[in-house]
Length: 285
Image (tube, rainbow, N blue to C red):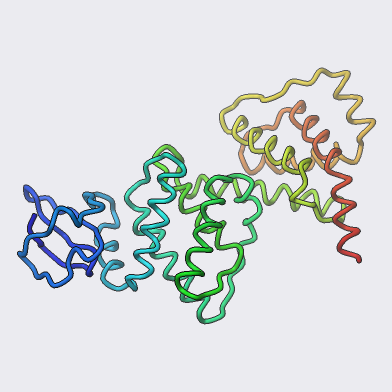
């Protein structure tokens, strides 16, 4: 392979059959110049920049510090191994660019909080775990302190780069909806939720399935009229809260939420009410 363009010491552009390829590897371009051959033993990654951001990626490779590019590639490789899934090529653009920005903010002691971090942790657990690992790697290698929420930011980039998953807008919509539902419960009862509790995790998992079913026009649960009536009577406050949430979802998703689903939502809300009270008690200490 012959070098067509040097992006940095670890990345070059080559041309094969008139098609550009980006080739990456430690020191692959060190001491090289255009039209020099590259050593096959130094090649670690090679891909065809067929995505829309090909030129942006080249720019990032030439303007971003090598240590951040290397860390980004290490995180991507680690994630591919842990998740056993291929990523879209644009992860090399989106994650590298994001990390460079996050590190720059941290060094300037500017903290940008992610209010959806807890929902991302619950929704995308495997990706979040990799995000936590990545934060430790970044902090150790760059001697910088990143906000805890950075794990969630990295997780979302990884999730959306999975070739079998929806795009960023779809994933963010789910996270935003679930965050809003949690806040509605907290406002309704005037207390905060203990999001680390198992009962809240069950509720969160249930709501994740409900959202998926509603969008597909399916019903997850069926509750007969006798049980539904008992829920309305026995758990009146929880049902009122669930009904309010159901009305909001109907508007947001432009699809009616079945009353049986509202009944099941009420049962889950009732189960997490002790956690609401416990969380409120801790806050008042």
